[in-house]
Image 1 (cartoon, helix red, strand yellow):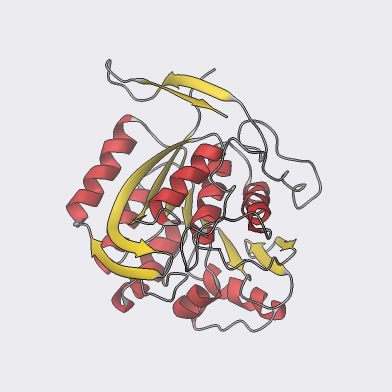
Image 2 (cartoon, one colour):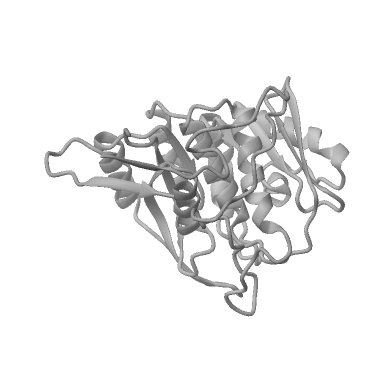
Length: 309
């Protein structure tokens, strides 16, 4: 078989392995795409919180990005933690020059409440990064940070989406997971609306779900799926392992959930696409198991990669 689509994550490293670059690459592997990374920051992080964060120089971020894109190529890009205005603007410029869809997760605060984005960088996210996004995936706290809109009920999700779309992304996915009741997200491009609903599970081990969702969307886009179908499949991928009993508690605080990263186990079937037209199939579909091998890149000495599931 030929090599799989390639997806690049531009984000911070989570030393605990539950979020950030580590969560992104696990999701990409599980969904059958070749994950690559540009590390923007190093964090000291565990189930209790973020104990420290160190931003990488812009030159190092730019060099990583160019090294991957200019040789190996990408079919989708996902962004996560970009701590400063200078980093945000650099990554936005790089994405603007890349012919691939971009999923922007405007990470502002960790699950533990630790700030991951400087206040001075918010305007750069609004004016530079969101305009180059194919899909922006803010949670309710990030919506409030970026737009000032505070969502208190499902009825407010439309208003939040409209405020985010004003900054230029083609689609906005407003994640309503912090609202009471069922977990409802709204995906819209300003005209079409897709309401994604799932049962709420009593599970506090949700560290890294935002990173995983954005990476899963990027993986599905790289596989050629349209945005609504890609988002529906990604939500199913994240929701299934969040059920009670599906997690493993790595420590005393908030931990990751098992199954999101485990390609060897059967994961939940993706729902039908929002218009009911069909169900995602093939290497990136949730629950698929298969293999690929192929050469990635241009150098004669490039090793052959192989994935099995």
